[in-house]
Image (cartoon, rainbow over all chains, first blue to last red; front, side, top):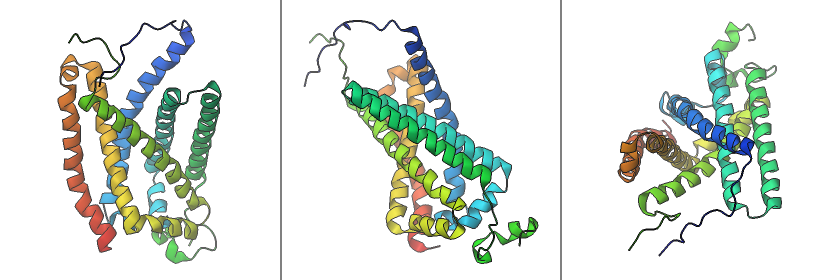
Length: 152
Length: 124
């Protein structure tokens, strides 16, 4: 099968700001990608390979991790970088596959809204997390942590 | 035949471009779901534990394995893209590097799968 030959573009975008945006997008995808490899591979290793793997994950496990500021910052960085990296990737796919201006606009508004909502939701969860909520069955809590905090 | 510049160069590079897009989309949607399920820690410990328990079932266990494989492919193909943008050597050998990416995926999955599947199916 022969692919069509490339033709010279009918016009070249002259908008300088547009090319600057794409340049930053290009740089961001590579920089965030490299950082995300470190963040996500560590996240997967700790959560899925140490201890009882996926079976260890419950409320008490999350409470134990987020008792340390390191993991809070780790998860927050992962959240923000991954959502922007993924959202920007989805933007490129919308540019490639959505055929009409209306559809591109609609999808991009939906995408930007979802990405913003998820980043806000995730950040709020990390910052307002309560490891020892009142009236919870102690069996579900990280007992050691809650005793240290004087909450149990 | 005289080779004219075309959009599609085919073979490994083009298929890896497809794999990169497909894995990227899958990881993006998983991430959205994953942030929402984690947000349940703010609803109640009971709600979080109940939903996260579904991640420990055999079907989800297999989906997680697929997700980890997708992340490995996307990650190392991303490094391959950076390499071929940066070094002429890598550009010249970009096709071989596709197989390096798949090789790394197989090696890492060989390390990950036995342990993960024994957690999922062995209950240990």
